[in-house]
Length: 124
Image 1 (tube, rainbow, N blue to C red):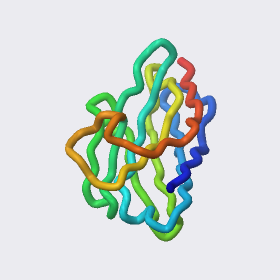
Image 2 (image 1 turned 90 degrees about the horizontal axis):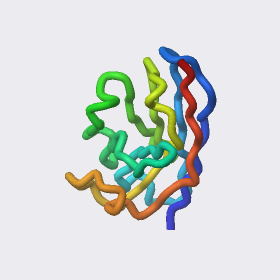
Image 3 (image 1 turned 60 degrees about the vertical axis):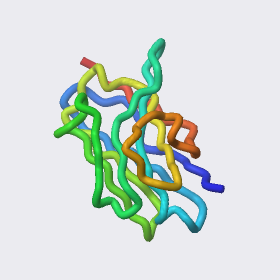
């Protein structure tokens, strides 16, 4: 069983930066593929970024490519999402997610473990 707790959300002006953290419990974290998703009011949960267990293979949604970076520190059992050049359309609740294997699928249904989410609000 893996528990995930996100932090680092908040209010930021357009063009600013935030770094989200996702602290995990469980000794098998280093073998898990970890991802970030977001959900804006009235919209479906959407994929943002994913990393393989070692952090060497990463994939990003086109909407965040070049602005967001996913990374992980397996020693600290934490995954991060560095968000730069934030836009108002990035406003959403951001969720950390984990799965036991890396997959070409970035569907939320391919992830087994979820955090409670952290709010990110970008003002114009």
